[in-house]
Length: 116
Image (tube, rainbow, N blue to C red; front, side, top):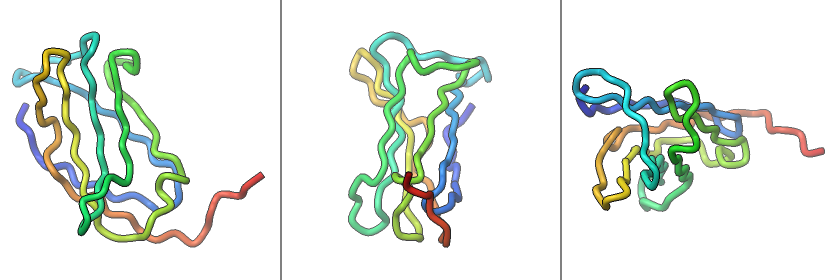
């Protein structure tokens, strides 16, 4: 399977669930080995500052994929265009692209989660 952009649209201040599936060039499922890390990073459009960062390991696998959640607090950011990518950091030091730089558009929301 090739590496290709995967633009996303999310809503401000809401829970957003993602799952990363790794497959090789033949479409065969691949799992992380001990010491490998999947790194999901969202960066600001203009400054390049990290806004959200998730690191997944072999311990995070569920039904052949690597799920994670971006919390409402993490997504309580200004609406607009951000960028994200996903990289695989291998235990041997290799650093490989999984999803290249893609759009991460945050749409405005009026409601916010109630604090208890």
